[in-house]
Image 1 (tube, one colour):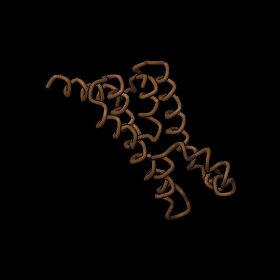
Image 2 (cartoon, helix red, strand yellow):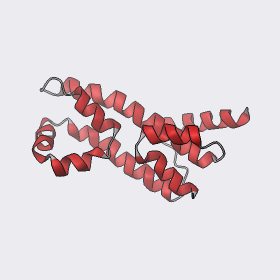
Image 3 (cartoon, one colour):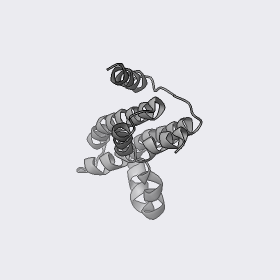
Length: 138
C-alpha cells in the first residue's frame, strides 16, 4: 500500500487507527509519525475538550456525549444528518462548537498525509517526532 494512503488511514478512526498503525507498521517512518501524531492529538483533544464542554454546559450528564464526538470527529456529520434536533440543541448550548476543532483538524491532517507531507502540529508533532527517532535509534 502507498505510504500516503497508510498516512490517511492513521487518522481515519483517530487515535484507534493511529495506535493500530503505530504497532503494525515497523519500517516506514512517515506512517509511524502520522500514527503517533494521530494517537496523541485526538486522545489529548478528547481528554481536554470533553470536561470543558461538560462543565460549561447547562445540561448535566453530557460528558460521555462530548467525549465520543471529540474522540471520533467522523461522527459529527453522521449526527448532523440523522439527529438534527439533538445537534441543534447542543449547538444552541454552544458546546458542540468546540467539537468542530477536532473535526476540522482531522480533515486537515488527512489531507496533509494524502499529499505526502509530514506536517507537524505545534505541540504534539515534535513529541511524535522524538518518539519515532528514539525508536529508530535503538
